[in-house]
Length: 282
Image 1 (cartoon, rainbow, N blue to C red):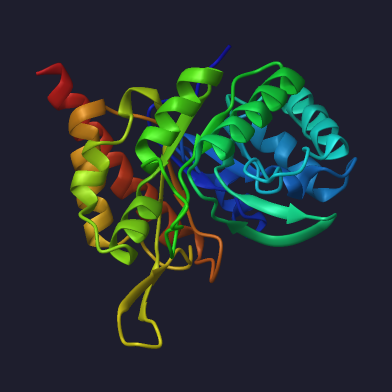
Image 2 (image 1 turned 60 degrees about the vertical axis):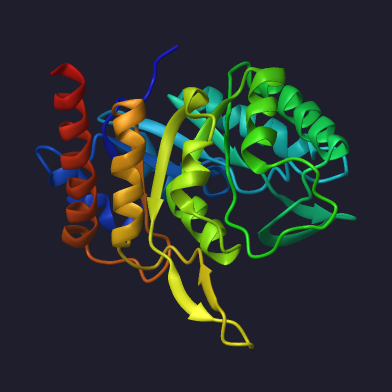
């Protein structure tokens, strides 16, 4: 099975299609959201087919509800299998979250308590996904805004155990980790040092919105509508010093900028990956 290159990629948006095809050295890979390509044809598939001929591909799911208490939607799984069979992506990933209940899709990635029960449920669901797709998947750490009193297992230990039981890899979203730690008044460096980095196969970087809650306490929102913040770049460099270069995606899903702005973010990530590569070789 092929793998993503340990370089910088971008989340593909249709308005950047012409620029991507015109670039002599575009991003090293592109990522798309699976649910945007579950139709049979049309312009989305025409664009993705053209990109796939030139670039490595990551498919990122947002609708499986891996952490939900109900059974996975088999029709959704079948559509996902058809999509992966069609494009043979180098990577497929989903979120440690839930988004459906009672047949209702909430269009959000909701947190779950870290308990032995939810651990068993998440592992069972990942086993089902990997069996259906006949490929390993990556599980992404969520951005969180609260902690459940019922949680018994630290998030890093929860993710490590999921990877151990299922054989899946992990997708480390460094912005999510930063957002979660700031909101929980925890040290991001300490959290990342405890993360199961040996299981990480891909990294996500994105911007966030900094605000305050109703009581005036700082509150970060994983907004994906701005450049990567300086503290997140610093954490990225810290992680690379331990892992070496890994496939790294720039996510920018809201207030999408013109191509040169997004390309500059990818180039900033690539410079740090190249520096990590040189350091590892020294």
